[in-house]
Length: 373
Image 1 (cartoon, rainbow, N blue to C red):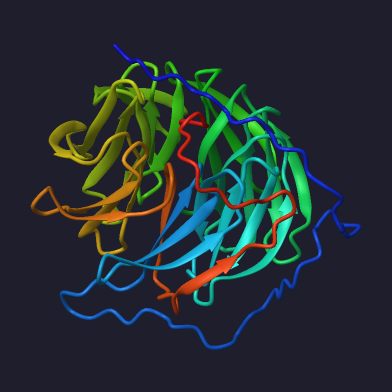
Image 2 (image 1 turned 135 degrees about the vertical axis):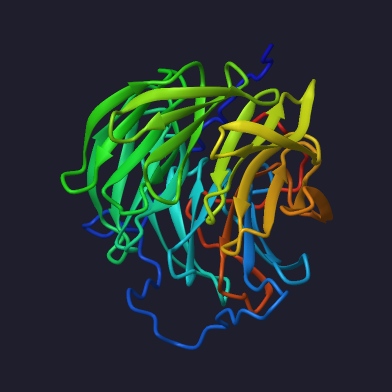
């Protein structure tokens, strides 16, 4: 039985903003930054890049060096940071400020905030199209998705989707964005050419996030309300299979090599789940379960498909999983209530900074009454 209960944090009042006519808050955003960055150089047997974590109750982002599994940087002041996503080239990361109803753009190498842009109410997840030109953010309280030009940071469309939109991801070719509507029990299909929802697919109870297969043929939806994962045929737009996983599955991620689908099982704070389910995509069966920390929530896989990184919501750390051994090889302490996680091939220079986000604030109190998806 699933005991997952979702609590969205109260939207904080946003103060007086210096907003441009496009709706973009005036920070130093440079659309084409071609300066030096510490780009990744792949070495045999050595994973290079940065794992970024959104700490929702900690109002911060944490940067972890993927080669050493050590924290190398922190961005404070992203109020209610629920999700974070690297751009396709890894040079920038985007995060949602759930308390301030904004998306925040950060230079991945320098940990510099480059700009913010308004979203709808209670933004949850943000994704970037494969060409890097547009972002899409789910607005959980509005039943909408905000489409934003990634260079100008201007909103280009507000798209009506199902009730309770939460996780979302673009198809590998960028043609579609699939949105998990937690309350409606559906996936909305957005056509990115026209920025309009063109279909809604019933998948089951409490879909929290989606994951595309690398070839784009299938999309998988974690069903937090029935402890299962649904497999959807993209061409037919219908569910073609389901498989049981752990208690309260939240995020799902398909490995880039196409072999595995990973699902983080969170449970509840009173009765947390502590596992990562490993699904063989060829047979669509669970072939392994890895014990993580308390309240496994977010998951990402590095481009080589050798490591997975799992945020543990209730133990405030990240589990590093060897995908060949299916074993945790490191545990990294991060901020309070880590949620979203993403991988950037760019290596950050390290350090600490405070984001100049209107309505943002730093926080050190331990409070887990927040958005649990």
